[in-house]
Image (cartoon, rainbow, N blue to C red; front, side, top):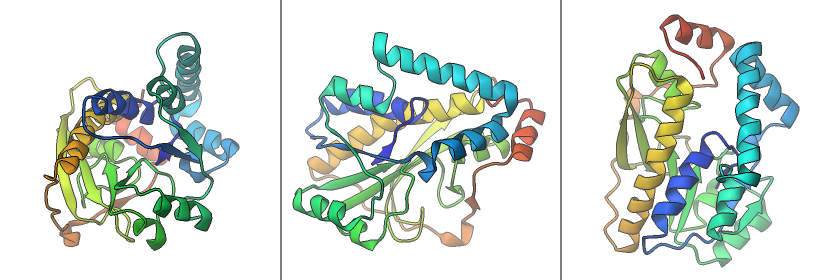
Length: 250
């Protein structure tokens, strides 16, 4: 379960689907939820405020380039990558819709995997499969919430940590199954770090699911929530602070 995003989630599925093809794991379908759970005009306003006029224009350029690549070159979007690998796509407006949840239970699935899903999973969804896992691009519980790679950069972290954890009703609070580190290079932009984290996550999550298929999934490690911190989507001022540290957004 994910969002249609040619920048970051596409990077995850490019490496994930390539790696999973060599593993004893079947991807039944990819469920696409609304991006950021917002309308397109609201999403445009959000990114315009965050990146500023010049940065937003560059982002649009990258978006158009990815769409052209989908049609005439190498696929980058989640939908195009799914088509290349023969994986069905389903568009769902509400992950907690009763009819949709019933189809999950009837499908005999072993794992529901959330990759940057834009909606909170309610208890019926969390109980719809034996394993409901989330891929989070931040160390937990210190980087709960949105855009953890951005906040790790702003806090001067030398690396970001990809966390795979069990999903529970409280956001980003389930037991940790695995962690994978991604070094931060001196010249990395926030975009670079997010993209690389998704590429690494795709490979490592495929390997983790293969371990589950072979009966060797690691035991979950409960989180010490006394160390938790929750972050929201960064503001225009947060973006300025990152640039003042010599880091670029794009």
